[in-house]
Image 1 (cartoon, rainbow, N blue to C red):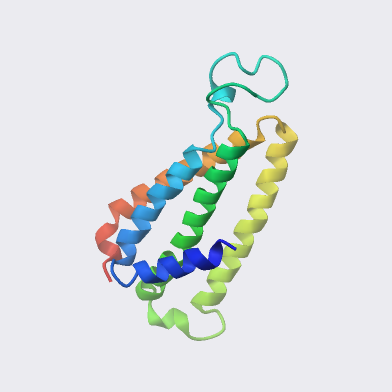
Image 2 (cartoon, rainbow, N blue to C red):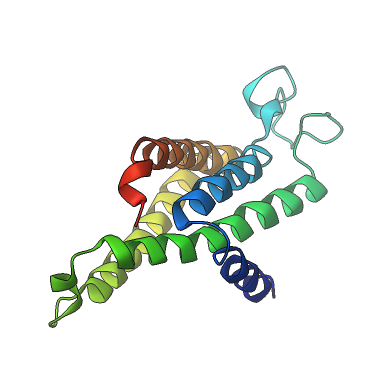
Length: 161
């Protein structure tokens, strides 16, 4: 229900701004959503002395913060997907658009293998500790978003197409 309105908003915004500008700005929103999902009481303090969840602590992630953070992070990642696809279609050489092993197939293979790798990663982390699974997933993801932001910022001129 949220993907279609976000896609419409992304298309409307792309009429007024460059894809590279929107990508960087949406990544900032993604980073804010991801940071709001980190349960800081698991990282610092004595809130996790017992094996229960950190109810009642101000920095603990509750249901409202989890839902809002997830919606913000997911929506901004979905919005960013359209800008990245648009930039890739402009940057990739035209020779990769023909034949059997074209750019569309390669992107599909990469995304499918990324989903499978993500499922394996979640399974491994869940077997390590189900109690800290959220932080074990969100902290590396937040770092990947920050690295992606740095790479887009660093190569900002290369995306000027």
